[in-house]
Length: 328
Image 1: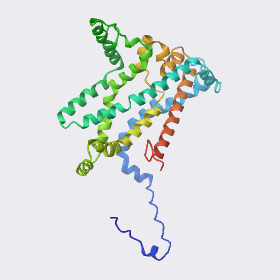
Image 2: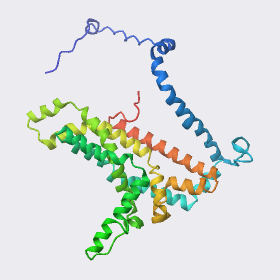
Image 3: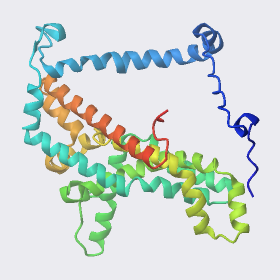
């Protein structure tokens, strides 16, 4: 039963109602006097952002120059327009790196992105608080490991002289070296990312699960809803805003699958399978001193990431979600 709607006398008489007065704007001095402690706390981070992100981003101008770092510099180098971008799109190494990057990203979105969600649901279903905290610490610990350590652990397990290969040989089978097989490299790097980062992603979804009202589960249980129906109608809708937000950010980061992970394994599997966008920028730009060419590749990566974020955020708005930012 819905509550009765209150109608003003002016509306009943057919008279036009006066518009609601706009909220007066607060003077900037008033806001400054009110928020100065927050501004002081945010100042160090803003200095870091401006000093290490925004000001250095002005150096992208070298992507349009014949950059000479020692003789001309940024202000003395000749402008060449989009010449580096034309060479970039005609470079087969760049096209291979772009194809590998997009393929690995699509594979990880399908097979890696759902893992933290399922892990969070499993941890959340554990009733013992001590056991849940212990398991949460165990799965979160690999996030603090460096990629050097992660790859070394996988080498000891999946390498030619690793534990699995030695066990197979002891039982009369041929050993398998997954660490040097280009055909299964995409599975290898995805499994490494899952083992290292799934625990951190689960923490985010556990925080979202904690924000769901427990009374909803109790009401659904009273109405006869089972575990799966509660999961489908309460848990997943409660997680949907966080899932959409992280998926948008993952799509915006599509060309950034990680430098260190692929750099450390490039010599083992070859550049055909492991060459991604970041390693291409390093080997084709920074390592050979062709900074303008590397800057052009990096600028292309940033523009594509921005386009993907804007497009994914627009789709989120069409589905009724807030996304990264709201339209209002």
